[in-house]
Image (tube, rainbow, N blue to C red; front, side):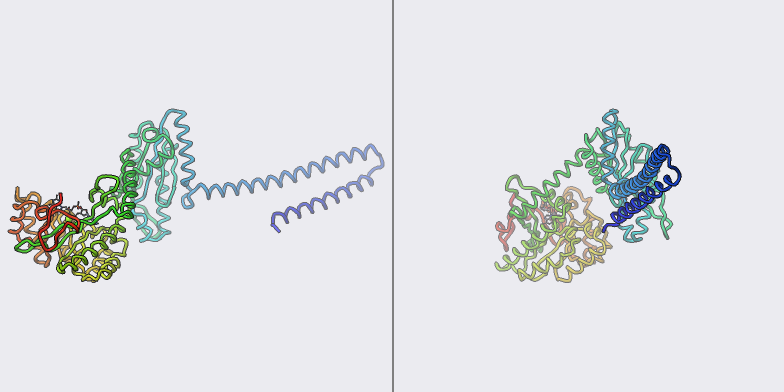
Length: 510
Ligand code: C2E
Ligand code: MG
Ligand code: MG
């Protein structure tokens, strides 16, 4: 039986025994005291009143204790439901309620409310390197500092692990938020200390939005402060962004584009085009670069410069990249059946494909499926991709090289261009970015640079390909400088495989 029911039964039993005993003994005492019926009546009345007073006191003390227990329980439940368990600050639910209340007050007093969203930079790394207990200590310390720089009327909330919100009432103009943000940044900038660590520097990205300047209700105000924060985070660490309408429009466009692109992959709207790469003294086609094209059934073609970054942002590039590798290998097998056994095809890779970790398996699978010698496939990677991926990137590169495929460093010159770094990379080919080739036949500003790149590539035994060669002038300078291979409109634009006559010269499509 429930403990509370047992307790209630026990109390009732005690009450019944005590009450009956009291009646029996008090009546006996009155009988013993007097025979006067009027006095007996009066004594009985007092006795009754005393009984009512005692039981009243008893009922009061019992219900008071029960009520106190209940309100303690409610307070505890509320704490769990509305407070962050680490800092005790309002969580997202309570922050939303407080924001709604602030907006109601602001509407009544015709003022505004600022909402500041704060995200501590690289907090995951801090947790990973120092452990969660230290991470928690730092979060509490950060919350303490943020509390210190909030106005009296401002409300600090802790909606999720490393994210804080500040509701600032009485802000009539969005520019008034700037000093508050400045104070937050100043407060966070001195080093923090935690068990065993004397100084840890924390920084934060901050986004802010204003009611009624940006949004007219709490839901949108929250969404816009988050959008501003996302913009700040996109720029890097320790950044701040005040909401602008383009921010959500860009996100909306991105989401729409992503959905259309997913459909495009399923409904076969994507196609691989191939652009020739020529070499040797007679400039014959030695390779092709595979370039993705998107022809939506319901609109004009979308250029790769638009859909590739969108797919990279959403992660869809992994599926697109896998599809491209399969298509290219299938096409290579077809060309080999037509007698072009020496043809090489290059396919572009993105950072997200490296991070997904399945790339070597995908490449090996496609080579096996179409029974291709690995040396016929070149994977094009960019310097920034390698830099972003760090050691993991180098490991994936080694695995790819282990498969026997060639690796080309694409858009060389636009990234870090550390020539010394080249020595440590398992690449076979260097593709000089179009930007350097563009001005070659007009001025020789880039000539010395290209010359230096080519002579260094020689030392490391790399093949040099010039991208974006459009004119005879550019071609002759590049040949003079000793460039090995050329790619560009001068030799052919990207074309669908069906329009390419392999073994002959490439045609132009556009
Ligand atoms: P990229 O890999 O550097 O490809 C070369 C780009 O230069 C292609 O643009 C090509 O059409 C263009 N191009 C070639 N010759 C000339 C020329 O003489 N003049 C001019 N103005 N442009 C020339 P595209 O096809 O628009 O692709 C742009 C970028 O999109 C590519 O740069 C690559 O980074 C990315 N991309 C394309 N297809 C794929 C793909 O399948 N996967 C991934 N991850 N990225 C791709
Ligand atoms: Mg490329
Ligand atoms: Mg390129």
